Length: 347
Image: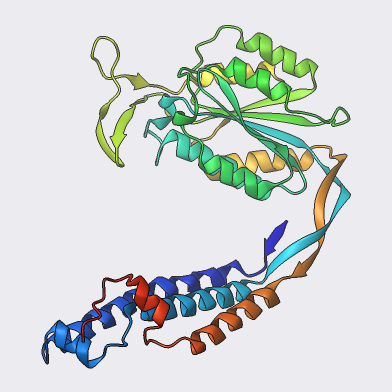
């Protein structure tokens, strides 16, 4: 397991492509200037040992050495010991609606992006709590098993989209059913399920499934995203709107947020309905809720005793710089025989 102590230094890697661009510009400029004095065949006779390949090789070696030295500044560390630690927290599962109605833009930038923002900010506020993520539309799918790795949760969350589910629609009952299987700690006294949706539900037994979750000790909170006035569902290509979703009659579909359904689910699930259109207020409500929740102790494994690895990158970086000093821009016999750049041997 690796950690990066100073990831901000990676920005200096941008120097490497700049070096290659500068190298190509200088190479082009040299050829242009040379043509003003003589044609290509005469230049080849005047400098028969000049090798384009060796020039490219030298710049590549220097760039690779520079990359290694930059990585050494970031100071990668490697965990050398896996140990079991005890933590206190609650178990939280997010069920994110990724049906196409969540692409509506009545809430900027869209309902789905607003939902991702809310979940991300909630994750940033968590301590040792465990989190899991489910996505659902016509069916539910596990996006991330319950874990203490909050960074991984945010990474997986950003990739969530309607394209990840094969069946469209909105089946909140399936999301709740899958959430029930997520909680693997029987001693956990506080299990939270946050359903983030616009409230559209195409199934009839959702409230019955919510009751089943309550029997398993799971409290259900719902976060509504969208407006009751509604909005069309944009169809995009390369980020540009090319039209709007239409029904079988050819009329533009207007998707409306349905708070009533979410309120009923939250009431049946012994939780609370939260209007998610105002991000700051939503985060405050949820943060207050989780702070007051009783924390249970659980065990988790993590790497410890991280050791610096920068010296390896410095060593190899210096090695490649030494190799560069031993390389000359003149042709060597075996390179000349390969004739990689179709260089003529006529003299």
